[in-house]
Length: 445
Image (cartoon, rainbow, N blue to C red; front, top):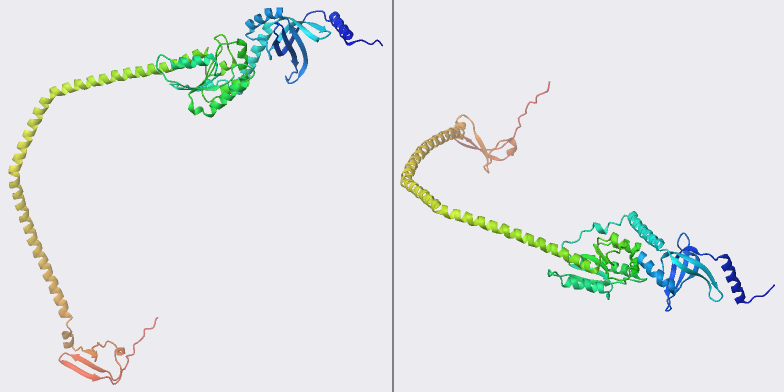
């Protein structure tokens, strides 16, 4: 078997590829890396992922030589709004090359921008469809902006000219409105846009009660950088922020997913400032209108009060004269009543005294008569109860020596001395014997 040098083997591979793959091919792939050398050549790494999008299944180097790059790159950017960068899916016309030293590579002859545009649109549509399916796409738009927006949390780059223009326009507005602006700095272009903006939004949400709204602004620049804002996590965060979000990213022709979910979309940072100033101007106009209405109403009320005062002034003499006459008549009536009232009251008093005297005399006579009858009845009862009368009838009263009245044989004992009173004197005797009287008991039938 013949032994070949590495150069000979690579030359053989080159010749076989040229004979076998001599045609041009349209290839769909994703750019994994793109870099432009000082000599003007553009070197790309093209990859293909599996259906799940997690693993590479193919990879190849691709060269876009300076002459073709200078012609194709501007056309591609004007058509898609994107530079050739990592993450883009492209459809390129290539030839297969194999160099003895540099190895396998693809030589790019043409690029189809419509394929990339379709992929970008498809990706945006997929993000919006996912937001719609999650039921959050219109959440931020449903929030109510305060009538007067004064406290503004801004997500932008501290060094961005657009941020400076935004602050300058707010500070020097024509209406003398004051705005409190605080920057939550974030990277607005490059690989860390999503992570940086999400961190700023999280910081604002932690103190949401301090702010009236959020403004996300990014000044002019390459349209290709706007694709960093076509991110589902970023769009979902904006949609679910507790404060209304105003987005001013890019230019009027540009549109990102954030524009679709934000409360308000404006063209530029200066347009965001103009929007906020206009809100304040509307409130000032409303206050001016209320001031005019209040002034007119107050003037109307004052004129009405003046007219009433004038009318009352003309009526006052008539009212005073009428009141004076009424008071004079009342005084005359009181004088007449004072002249006749004492005599009438005296007659009434005399009549009442006579009536009371008659009633008192009659009442006293009746009470005396009743008392006399009562005394006579008591006298008769006392007379009937007089012991002397009982004694005259043959009754007697017996007392012990100590003065106790004897009512029963139990009240005396043998040898006791008893005093018996009769009608004409008292008999003293000693108890010789005590005999108890037998009582007959009744038998029941």
